[in-house]
Length: 130
Image (cartoon, rainbow, N blue to C red; front, side):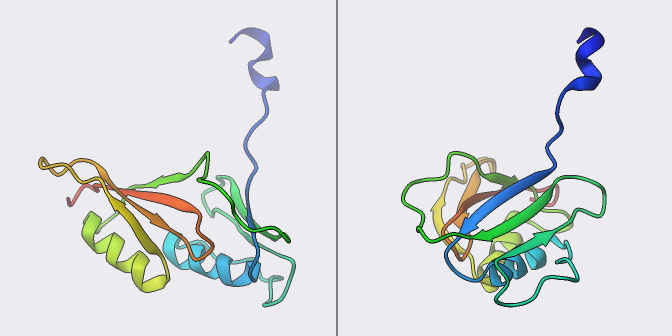
């Protein structure tokens, strides 16, 4: 690491493009992750922001004219807290997610791939409760 270790950049924001209302997509992720939308964000705004109360990167949702055309090259792997994977997947589906694939292994490992309402993939892994 040496002397330059303190000079490396930090990840401040993860940005999601969307063709729909950024506020609506922000609400989905707000509910799923338990992060509040910024007080300034309103329906119809060109962007919406979720801050991490623990100081991690913010999530920014920005309206763009072009739709998603390919699989994400980066995505979230979520680990349930206080819920099983099946409970977390059911909760995500009730919020508007869609299930794409089930990669659960016979030993209980693996993951389930979902998409948010804009088609962005994310995975739900097994949590401490299963």
